[in-house]
Image 1 (tube, rainbow, N blue to C red):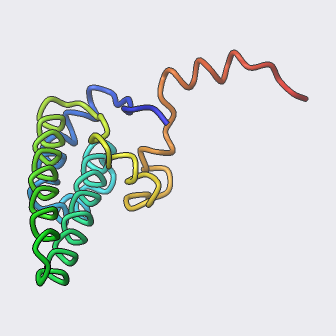
Image 2 (spheres, rainbow, N blue to C red; image 1 turned 90 degrees about the horizontal axis):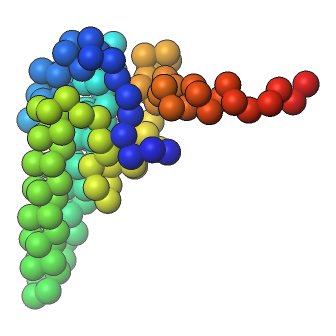
Length: 138
């Protein structure tokens, strides 16, 4: 899996606002922009960040009686905020790059797959050229 997906300029322009909104409140593009591949890419990235934030919160709360765990989850929370800013900047710039460290979990979870509208099911121009170069096995 590559570090970034390819989208047409039209797809980026159509989904950019919802892609930005995904990092603020991912439920809005999740329910209203399912057909916009660029928006779904960033929605999926935002959902992964949200899941990690919830896990960190639960661990930090459950183990708050210890001294070190809240400090560790607090530092991890700051790191998560940095990743959130990276994702937001990517969306604003019209780029579809995975968020470092955690972004590749989105497609594995299949959170935003919806038949042919899924960005994962679309082939990138690089992959199309690789497919045409392979010999036919029939």
